[in-house]
Length: 154
Image 1 (cartoon, rainbow, N blue to C red):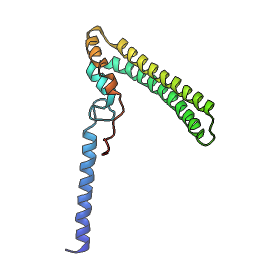
Image 2: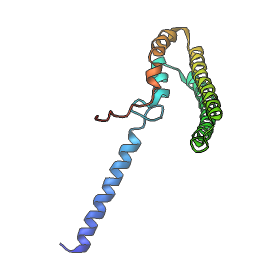
Image 3: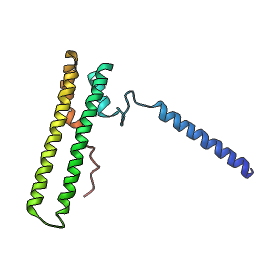
Image 4: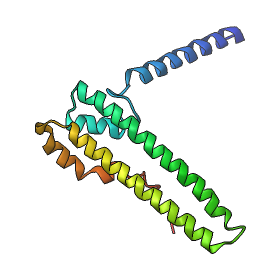
């Protein structure tokens, strides 16, 4: 087999592999978008509460507000943590304690934002969806917990 024929076969094989991969990626989009096998927490909430299209639109607005508020708070925490860890070089106990207190106030605000977000979601529910919301409320902490890294061997 000459080189031209071999390169042609390889090129066609790679082209078919790329087309197959593209088809697979495009055909397996989640119903409501988002990461993860269930489309992430957004889709889990939409599906478990059986939101209609109007509720989904209202929920999208709530998500936008929630993410915006959380992002602002997390940016403030990053700034404060940078200041805090700079006290390792220029040790000042009063500054360190003050910064830790400021971080804790913002963290408390983040939890308040999360709580309000779920109150708003509850308010979106029709009376027939409230039982599902009660069930979901018992899973909220696990649903939004950060993924745990694998345990290291000791």
